[in-house]
Length: 264
Image (cartoon, rainbow, N blue to C red; front, side):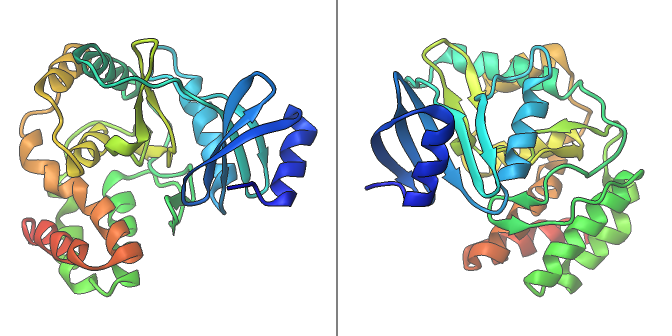
């Protein structure tokens, strides 16, 4: 597997001679440049992802993120993270550092990235949480013809959303975007940064694999969760479920319908 020639030239011009190249799946590669490894990605959301990594990296005490080596159009190059199997320490560190990230207030809801994965979204900021989530649900529902299913929930968002926010979110926090470092820290990659409610990141993390109790315990030591958060997990999982329905369809459509109907 080799890098396409145009990426190879752009990368070597900035970082130096290219050595080994290994596919990471999709449009991503692990590349040896000099004496270090970098991750090379290509896609329309590369500039947004680079900006998101920088914003997350500026938050003291938040989960670490790779450094941006190069962001050039559709090309993103970041430092690689040396990984090891997940430990209890990684889980506790993830909980504490994620809570510190979620203590970072931002001036508006939304904003930030115009992509979550390969799905385009409207990045317009909003002064109101219900307006933001309502617009995002409606935008995605229109793309997969679920407008009628989400309409009752959108009408009730002022009632069902928890207090607090907006805060800085990773925005695409599933377990595949958490790396367990050899340094004992839990690293985050591939963000879709925006202003939202902390429960959104936590709900997404729970969508594609269980969240260990020690993550929640460590998180709550820094930032206690609002009462009733367990009953709102489906509310905040509706966003990624709609995204996956747009991108993949199939069973995600049924899961999105089930989540929306809980609030009808």
